[in-house]
Length: 319
Image 1 (cartoon, rainbow, N blue to C red):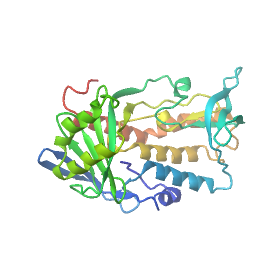
Image 2 (cartoon, rainbow, N blue to C red):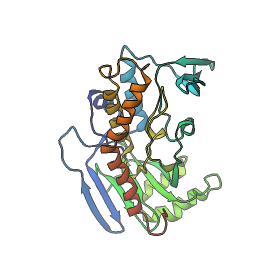
Image 3 (cartoon, one colour):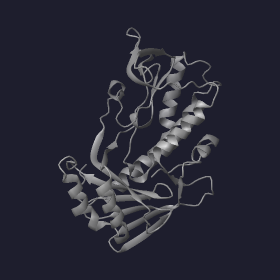
Image 4 (cartoon, rainbow, N blue to C red):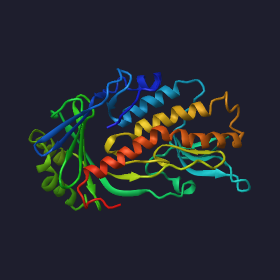
């Protein structure tokens, strides 16, 4: 679930026409006990939204591409080009999607934002990525949740389960599996879902869950934690999950990312930095960025990790 503050006109428009669903809070379930945790009301401009991540990102790309100063090139970066003498990043070598050919592209400032499985993180960030569990995900069709317009956290003696409305007709269920993930290829993972997870779910959700297990490919992804790092490399900025991650239980990653973009766009504005060739000035602003972003990102990161430890049974999660 993505808890998104509407920062600007572009973000607001990006949520249109993707069947995004408003989220008014959380609904916690423990056996027969249920507790509602509403978001504090701040008006229509601030609140939760849940949606298909890919649709939202595509809308953001469309909005960016519509700007006269933006040129879109679909390619896969395969190498970061550096000046061996100075250590400054000069650009990237990329494989074009249309032709498969390699091209070199140079710029005074290169941004890496290639996500959780970043291909370049280890070159510039020394902090290790910590993985303590995996999320296993399925789509539930036309399921009626106990509390509409709320993210649901189902607690059990095993691990937390998150369910939220993804669009008008679909909800996503994410099952946290601590430790080593059972094999999907051998059928162990499906059996775990049937024997361990199914009985935990509310009765009205079990049919949709069983149907999804039979008809969908079971997807999984690691739940990662990575503390933020100060960008020190001349000519380079690392952003997003490539630079900083928290447990996705609270859905705070998108808000952190949007806040980072807003803050960075102000710190690197032409009024402050007339040219990105001035690497010393850019690095000064990146120092400010590192500390200014903590006002929001630290709160979300600490909340995400703390709630996961709180909702996980004692003894399953070890520091």
